[in-house]
Image (tube, rainbow, N blue to C red; front, side, top):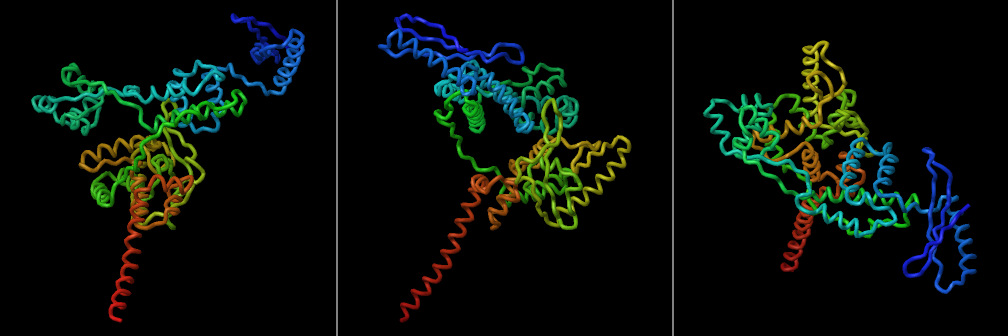
Length: 470
C-alpha cells in the first residue's frame, strides 16, 4: 500500500512524497521506491486529496510492474553492476580495461545519482581528461656522463647491462644521452653504487591522454548509461548529448617494401626462434597474440595452411592464458608460401632438439613459440626482442603489430582485392579494412587511374592522328 507525506516549501507551495514498499532484498533491507507529486496551482484541497489518491495508485502499479526509474542509484554503483553483468561477455582483457577506465570515471562522476547526471557533468569530465598532465607517465632520465664513466671504469656495456639487470641495448641508449625510464636509471645507478640524481637528470613528463584513450572513456560512459536506459533506470542517455572526442585520423604504421626487405635481410643472422616468429607475422598478418596461441596441430604442412582459432594473452595477476580470437571472422584459415613453411619445419626440428636438452624440465604446452622450458611464450617478449633487434641494426621503427599492417599494405599495393585481405586479417567487416588501409587503397586507385588514362589517352591519340590523316 502506497503512503504519502506532505511537504511545505519556503515559498508556500506544497508537494507530496509518495512511498511504496516492495518487500526486502537478500540482505533483509527494505526496498523502497519514492515519487514526488506536486499539485497544480489552483487546485482545491478536495481536488488535491482526490488526485493524490490517484497518484498513489498509479505509482504503486508502476512499482509492481517494474516500470519505476531507479534514478537515485549513483553512477558508480550502477557501473559496478554493469561490469559484473558483462563479466561473462567480456574477454579478460576487456574486463580489465573496463575496470581501469572506471577508476577515473568514478572519481569524476561516480558520486552523482543517475537521475541527476547531466551532459555538462560528462563534458567537464572529458575536458579534464584532455588536459596535459593527466596521463600517468613515468619520469624519464638522461645521462651525459654514463658513457665516459663506463670507459673510465673499464666496464663494457654488456657487462653493465648484466649487472644492472637491463639489456645491453638499453645501456647503449643511455650512453647516447637518450631518454630512458627512471626505474631503469635507478637500476644502472645502483649497479654503479651511485645516486641516480647525480648520474642522471630526471624529468617529469607532462602528457595528455591519447585520442584513442579519450574515445575509450567516451564509449565506456555511453555504454553504461545506455544500459541504464535499457534497464529503465533513466529515461535517456545524457552521454549522447555530449560531443564525442574526435581523434586525429592516423594511418596504420607500416613498412614500405624497401624497409620490409631491410628487416628481412637483418633477420638472416637472428636466432631461428625469433626469425621464425617475426617472418610469420610479416607473411601472415596475424596478430601477436594469435601467433603466440598457435599449436603445431594448427599447421597443415602438406597444404601450407594455418588454422587460427585462439590467441594467448597476458594479464597481471592472471599470467599467460588462452582465449578466443577477437571476433568470429578472426577464426580463419590462411595460406602461406613454401618459404615460410620451410622455416617452420626447420624451427620445429630445432625445438625438438631443445626439448631433448631440457629433459624432465621441459613442460609440453604444445605451443609453437615457447619459453626455454616449453611453456607458452610471453607475448610482450616478442615486442621486447623486436625493440632491441631494431635498435641494434638501426632499422626503421616497427613493432609486431605494425608487421600486420605492413603485410596488409604490401598485399593491397600488389593488387590483391581488399575483400581477400580483410578475410586474411580476420577483420569483422571490410569497412574496417577500408578505413585502416585507406592509404594503400588510395595509392592503388591512383595507379588504376593512371593506367586507364594511358589506355584511353593512347586511343584518343590514335584517333586524333587518324582524323588528321583523313
